[in-house]
Length: 61
Image (cartoon, rainbow, N blue to C red; front, side, top):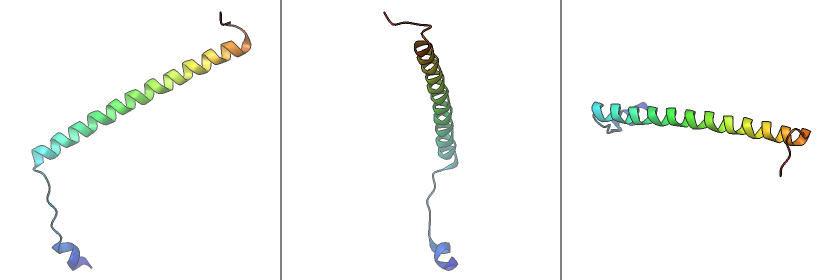
């Protein structure tokens, strides 16, 4: 089995291209984290607003 795997050739992009790909993926990870934080904050605001409506502290006009 190992002999078969040793014969398999895998082409890889040059190192500068690999670095560029890694940079793009890191930027995407950072953007996803920021969006997840924004979503969590929106959920907390929604929860707080619902709580105020249910307790009667705030009324809709």
